[in-house]
Length: 255
Image 1 (cartoon, rainbow, N blue to C red):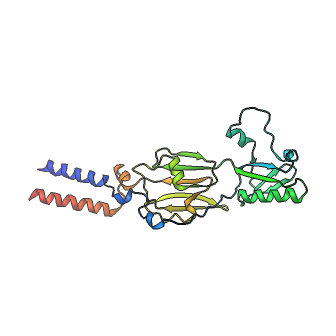
Image 2 (cartoon, rainbow, N blue to C red; image 1 turned 90 degrees about the vertical axis):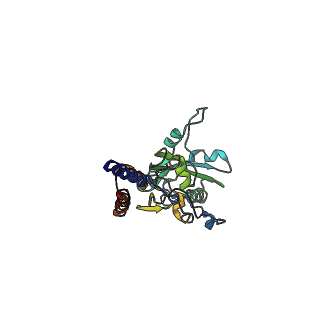
Image 3 (cartoon, helix red, strand yellow; image 1 turned 135 degrees about the vertical axis):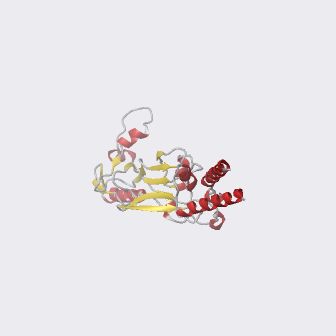
């Protein structure tokens, strides 16, 4: 009889430890509430240590040559790493050194704002006629750690990527990922913020957290089932539940 009681207790504990409800696993369970909504695209702002690609053209193409980084005469297309080395590194003071124009303040501005600003400087200063400037961020990346299939740091070249896209780079959450409390660590204007996101709901669609900023950090913690399987009991309520069920089972067996 004693052995039977012990076996039942062990089975009950193992079952309780491995239980995860459907609501803890499914994504965006209220997505229908956020259907047909306008999307507000938000451009990332340039920060120190960013690397920029800046290309200048003009009505007379030859006149724009001094304002562009010379890439040499290689017939093959340069790799992204080579392009980064030839880009403009934003200093800790938030400036770049641009040909002819000298030191230019760029931090806190979007790439589009830098484009318009350089075009104005080049035209108003009499440097170029009808200049066109293209600015792109070359070293945008996001780091994803925790319960995802492929944790790591991922580079992207798009101007905007979403949180689901970023998690897709890492191969999605594992079955043990805590979907209702994703941590997004971001920096803005020199201030670090930690945002908690519930992927089982869609209420964060219209928040700034929908779009990933370069150098954001995403953490997916293990869910309760994973934590329990590691031998860690999360709270007193779970302990009381296990004890209560175990005692009930013992009483039924003894009777």
